[in-house]
Structures are given as C-alpha cells and as structure tokens.
Image 1 (cartoon, chains in turn yellow, purple):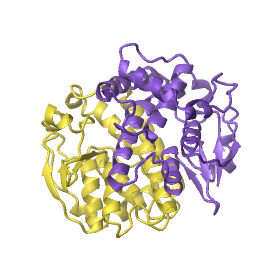
Image 2: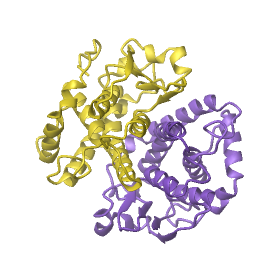
Image 3: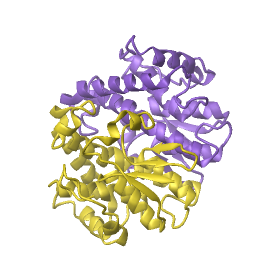
Image 4: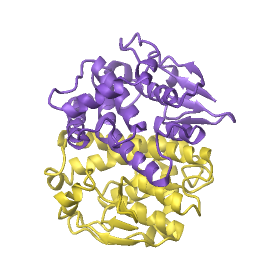
Length: 216
Length: 216
C-alpha cells in the first residue's frame, strides 16, 4: 500500500493511527500548498481532490480519512482503535461522526473560508461570509463535548479510539493558527493534554507547511 | 432491537435499508415536531438529540444513521448494501462520506437555518445568515456528483449501496419542500428515477409531519 501524505491534519491523523498500530507504510508527500492534489491526474483518481489517499495493492485509490482508518483497522486489528465487536465498532463510528459534524468539519470550513481563503478560493466554493459562523459552531461543539467528557481521558470512556485521533489533530492544528481552546472547557483541556502525551502525538508530526507556517 | 423512528429523512433511510434487507424491526415513533427527541430523558441517552436511534438488545443506544446502517449490515449481511470485503466496505464508506459532506449535510443545514428556522432556533446554534450559502453548497455538490455518475444507476458503479439510500431520502425530502433538482443535472435525474422505482422507496414512506407537511 502507498499513502499519499501531506502537511495537513487529516494525513497526520492517518500517521498517528499507524503509529498507534505500530505499522509503517510507504508514503509519498503531496504539495497541497502548491495544489498538487488539485491537478487533473490526481482528481481523476480522487474526485474529492483531497489528501490523504491510500493506494491499495491492486491500485485502487481509497480517499476520505475516516474510510482509510477503518480499512487500516481491518488490515491491522491490534491494538483496537475502532472496535473488536460489531457494537464497539458502531459506538466508535457514532463518536467519529459526532466529532466530525460538531467540531472538525466546522473547524476546517472556518479555516478554508477564513485565514486560508485566498488559497482555497480557486479550489472550492468558498463562503467567506460564513467563516465566523463556522467558528461559532466549532466552539459550540467543543462546549457540548466538554459537558459529556466527565473525567474520561478518552472520548469513548475507557478506550482510546480513532475519534480521539481525529479530534486531536484538528485541535492541535487550530491551536497552531491561534484558535485556542477556551479556558472554561476544562475537560477538553485535560483530554487534550492526555492525548498530546501519547508518543504517537509527537511522532506523527511530519513537516512544516510553508504556506500556513504550521507543523503537521 | 428497537428503532426510534420519526417522520424525518434519516429515519426513513434506516427504514429503506431494512426493507432492502428484508428485515423487520420493532419501532417506536418519536414526535420530532413536538421536540420529544430534545427532552432530557432522550438527550441523556443520545446526547446528539437526534433520531434515528437503534436500541440494542443489551440496552445500548446507538445513534448516527451512518453508524446504524453499518451495524445493521454486520447483523444482516445479505443483500450487501455496504460491502462484503474490506475493500468494498471502504469504497462504500468513502462514498457515504462524500455524499454527506458535499450534499446531504449542507441540505439539512440549509433546511434547519432556513424554512425550519423557528423550529430549530431553540434546539441548536442556528446560522440563518448562512442558509442560502448552504443551499449553494448543496447544489454545487449535486453538480459535482452529476459529472461523476456517468450512465450508472448507482453511486458506486454496479451496486446499490447505503450511499444511494442516504442521498435518495435527502433529495426526495428536498423536492417535497420545493428544492427541486436543477434541470441540467441530467445524470442525477436519471439516477433519482431509478432509485425511486425500487420497491423500498415507496414502502419506506411512513407518515406525514404536521409541521413540515412532508410525507417521510
């Protein structure tokens, strides 16, 4: 398999997931700042135009990081990061979806339509008039999650999962562009510190983007 | 198992999926118009506050329709609606995610922040200033998918999947509130007609919402 990687949070999520699994894959860096992932030969194989992409051994291209993580879980079941039973998998998918919908999707939209507007203007429909609204949604989602975490160090109580990885790389990215966690969401702060202390958090950092100045 | 059902598109997606599987589950109707799904005893068990919810035999509540469909696929593998192999499942999840992100999420956001604003104002952060923008995103996503469909009658070429169901119930709902498919996306029109002709499409209609006047 070959991982199309890049200096962006979702590729980092795949890297962190692989580190937790103890698996090393071949990878190729894509220049997202330069729009390499928006060129015709890439989009022809991944019409979403995004990274990461996992090229399977038969040549199939698999995109969307949530789908990639689940595929990797099926290939490398241990340690469990999604679920060993149908119920565990379902709970993990439910939380993955909640995290994406309530927090990480609004976060990335706020970035694309706000600070990164000029880069993304030619790549997608951009809604600069909604950049602040998406940021409001993101902070609302964080506040909602803060109220649910209790004293757990993981989103699914008792087990570290893909949902933790998905949220961590997003919030670490947000922090690096100055979107800090609000002081009052203390449970999220505690959760973030616990996740950041995992060896995979630092080890998944790969390179700095010249465009955003952020280390992913 | 017990399905918490309602007169809304995502519960209909679960019904349509079950009809395709030939499976019948016990269900209980929730009065979403009246906010039954936002009451404390419901939200305590499903902090997303949405329907559908699948109550498992051990009492666990499973929310998020994408997670529910995958759980049901694991319980009732035939006929295959997600995938029989790891690669098939991954491709189906990739398309499910694309459909949600590019089309159905913007569609539902445009509905919540637009025509249904007064109902949802007390239930979630609403962004009425972005309602039109979300509709723009939805139509952009449809145009994008139209260019990818070719002459296929299914989103994943050669096989009907959960992604078709997810998109169909959303577009049938959109049509019922006057958000029609633009005439120029002819491949989507053809796909929609083929999906609407499946017995599960009509059979999954359940009841009319007094609030929206739509039959789901």
